Image (cartoon, rainbow, N blue to C red; front, side, top):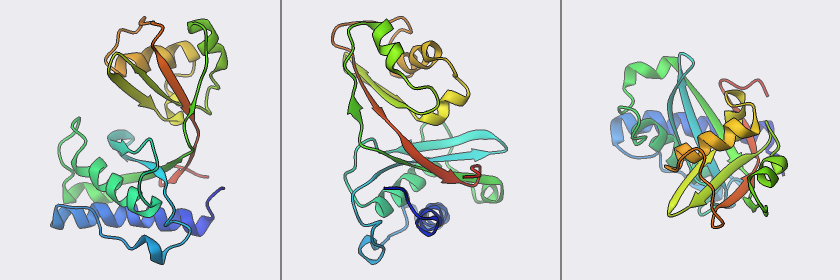
Length: 189
């Protein structure tokens, strides 16, 4: 069920406040999901940070395991302070920070016979993917299609992100698809 504009605004506000709170408290903003139905239902989210158009952090949950409001608060904090690809966010970066929230649908397994069959099932611009094989795992949000617009490039780079060779294939490869409802400072939706 799509989120209302006020629910989107509430989630985005919690994400921003959690980042600000984290600057002085070294933890995510404490929230009371029960006071914010239906954001108290389990949900999975990713929070993506950009600064001057460049990625500044992205952390999320692939499976719903806590209330959506709490998931956004925790992931916003983690994107700002725990993404191992970046230094911890500093207070001077807040004014130029774009915050985007993506709420994930339940991942659905894809059944395929070979790579060509898998590629034929992908929906560019719509699908987020989770790829897993040989103890390695990676995901790309649907927004990654903007920079990797072909199914071949998307899958190849997702394998690399998971720590597998770009041409990797095996009978044990597993893939799930999900969609997102995304909104924030750099979205006009």
